[in-house]
Image (cartoon, rainbow, N blue to C red; front, side):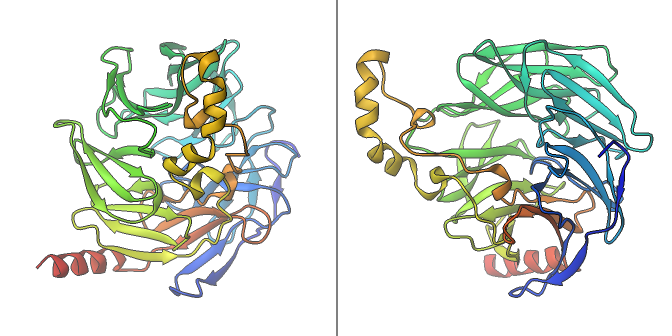
Length: 389
């Protein structure tokens, strides 16, 4: 299946049987499909196309479908693509992604590709584009160590700005500061910031393995991060005061804010209560629809206290050899991580009229788009204001 091949539309609309929201299933072929990562929009800025990953070629490649009912086109034909690495430029004309050790750029119109940087011997993760579109940050593993790489979009190469023996995941640029990067370090403590030149590497929040913090991201329009304390609450963290506070007490999971920072989109698991949109100021929330994904991964069924209890014997057995106990990330007695495509990973479209998510409720992971009803945000805000009064 070469680059540029066209496929007939696989899209069809239905309605969520609880909320009545219109949901389009965009893919149906019998292989894994998933949207881009929850930290980046999967739709072009005009909401006329959705970009996603498909395994129909036997390995992950990027495809694009015209929304709501158009043909599909294969965008890439490469081996080694990181299926969750794709991120669109602000104008929607370029898709940036990683493929093994390379950061790549694809022209959506011509399908021309170019390599922006090659970190020989490295394995790169997801891409995050900075506010002025000049830099891309990615996590990288090489020679047994974790690294952060910053690549210039003009094709002039890139630099490794930080390395660590700890796991590094989800580096992302601040939505308005083009040099500020937040990243997650595991095992705990987790939340860090660093400048794009590698300076000012700073630990934000000191905690141990009993506090399970995940999926942190910037809250636009503020000096805050939002973060999940699994599986207890959606929280916010002030970069200015270094204080943590609660937004809403529920099992928020993967989180994505609106561009004005007033609302946060969340999926949920164990139990799955559907995609929630939360009013940041009050914690008031409302269900958009129900993905009914399988939500794989045993770590999401328990908190870290339960994991520590289960694996205490294994940790003790190696404590003398390593001089320390096992962290939760290192506990291998039972399978921990489920397939990422079994998680919804919802994200807003740029215009915030739609939510793109993945669900394997049919037995195969497929891409879905839920329409946000007119007045949804306004009604939620009114309810929040009424409750506050």
